[in-house]
Length: 583
Image (cartoon, rainbow, N blue to C red; front, side, top):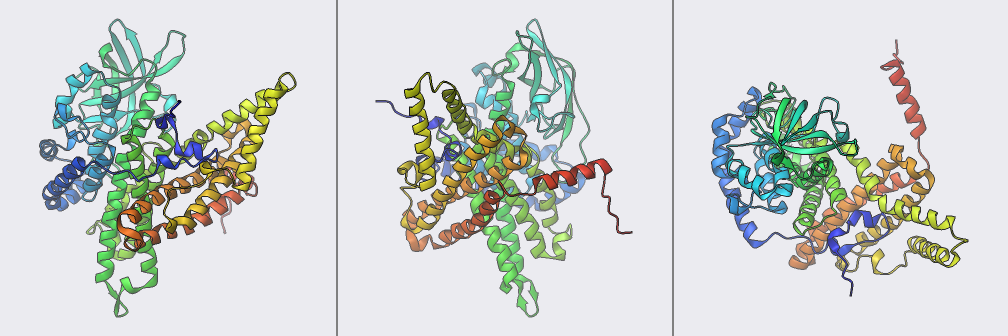
């Protein structure tokens, strides 16, 4: 009997086909007891290490400096070995536990969380995912202690989100590769001794492809630029990295020659739970600060926590934090469970968590009023720090296109198969009729809502029946919308960014809601409906807002002002500014 390999199924790609793969997200993933104990110990120790340094973090932000002595303390504490296997001296944390560890760090300082995250999430993640035993034995001992700090080098002056257009080259010369080029905005660049670097390599067929290399600072020809003067994350040393004829031994190739793009994407996808964890940690700290301030600050004879508009802001902050935590934890759980198809879901977690943290930071500063604008208080620094989250590790605009186009791929393949069948339908009428019947049956199922368990949730608690019914209906709308858009645009969908963006917005809302339903369902099962009532309230509030957003996006698939927007933008580009000065 054939057993389906669940690790190769994507929840969101299936959703675009109208199928709800609830077994992928139910039950809500749980950490192993051993990792929970480790995290409890780490959290307590972090408080002792970092809480007394709050004033230091403010000073280091102003001075744009992260002292070497403090980095050494972090290394001795084990923070650079969070994901390195225990047999190599690390903690061996899996994705859920690692994400939670970065949550704890970011409560104290985002620059510090990014320093650790750039090392663990992306800088040396390739070694964990693709490294040979020899490479790991060679580099792990120094990486685990922080004697070597890692950095990820993909971005270039002419290649940001468009990773495929990098210009750094690597030419094979005997048993070495010679690298030339420059990398830009490298997090940890000023303190790193270990770099995962991507360069173009010419293949046997003459075509240029990307390859990943492990490069160390002591290699001749490696040079580091000055510390960038940044808006936020100021104490993290971000620099350029220059490669001038750097001879890298062939045994330092990471993965296979020519497979660098795959390596880069796997590293970024696998490491997104680190950035997500940092976002959630910031949000929890902001909610603590905002609620504390609101219950102490008095205006018009009352604390501002009694005012309706303040309550509305705090409630939305709580919903956003719960939603972001749910989706980040779910993606980490998929990774820990061995999923091979989580790229779309990981991208959604990054987009949603980064934008939620930005909204939360903005509203927390607003609640603080004038205090929020003053450097004496932590709000303005958090706003500055978290603004980059929507840009690095893939801009949210590019990730939205990736979410939509990748998730639609299976539907596009089915339509292509249908098109090929139609061409030969008169030569093979029985085969053609069979394919047409299957496709017609699927479309009828989506429209009617009657299609068996694949189109419905079957394991959610009855208390969530309204949210489940909403999710099922919107899934049918999504699948029919994807079908309609692909039929209309065909391969041209790649250039239709407005249409792709709308689909991505719908997909983001649906996946976040699915993660929340899974989490709340788990709470109902463990605490009972009464004990989980506040969480039920949270998912109800999210669903209500998501309903309005999705209705708007579905409606604008056919009825929109896209052409007007493009015409106005083109006019501004031509004028290089705004034409209509009132004077």
